[in-house]
Image: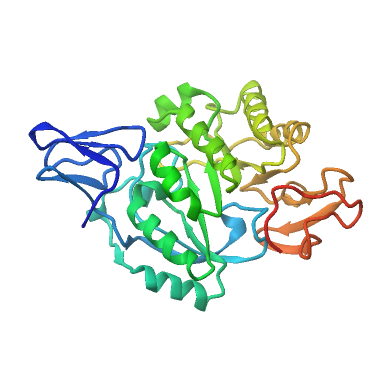
Amino acid sequence: MKEALYYQKLENQKVLCLLCPHHCIISPNKRGFCGVRENIEGVLYTLIYGKTSSIALDPIEKKPLYHFYPGSSILSLGTVGCNFKCPFCQNWSISQVFPEEIPLEKIEKETLVNLALKNNSIGISYTYNEPFIWYEFVLEVSKFAKNYGLKNVLVTNGYVEEEPFLEIAPYIDAMNIDIKSIKEDFYNKLCKGSLKNVQRIIELAYSKGIHIELTNLIITGYNDKKEEILELIEYVASIDPNIPLHFTRYFPAYNFTNPPTSLEILKFAYKEAQKKLNFVYIGNIWDPESSTTYCPSCKKELIIREGYHIRKNLLKVSNICPYCGFKISNYVGG
């Protein structure tokens, strides 16, 4: 175990966790909402420091990141726990369990960096469950990886306090942030979190120059109303129309049995978003059109994807459209 960062000691050996907006007040021998930070005799400890449940070499497109070194591979790892309680979570078998409930492997930062370099990975992605509750380890590895020219990627729900985010931000190159709904009520009831806090991190990450892409899982009967989708599109456009937005098809998972997202509503979201945003994609379906990157100016195909495979990339040499000379903003790498 390792002493946690971002907490305050209170009376009677209680502690106040300040890592995420839950601000859990934790009594001795109890854990916070995330299930991985425990008060032991008035000191808050992280129970998952250096402990991984999953590790793999993934295509960067799987994060999903479509505008960050397309066609590259990235060493990806996760642990257990989450500070959301989404009943539709696709990774619930690691995100909604306690550290003692599944096997975890101890891993050192040196091992991770060596694995990344050995496998020609562009860097390390902290993913599969919520990386911000793994904060102490992710921060240390991110700093260390930078010394070797590796990129750091967070795949996150964005539910973290501003101060810890600003500490780790200089070491983070890219983020895919889940924006689960544009309605506060959705976050409150289903995720047990808050939309406004997630929006704050999206806007902070953008202001710090971190490459960001956003993902919205459209869930049948919950956030699939057309007016809500339009409101979400407007929000993203208000930050920057060049931010890639990934709409993802929902399939029944964990405690949700609602039918999969209709193709009709996905196509609606895709077409409407294209009116306001320059880069829109649909995930969890096989559809070459909605996974292709088009030039916002001349509309020619620039990157053609087949699943996670890149069939053609005309931006490999530069981020200038070879057809019309338009500069493709929010694109990193070859």
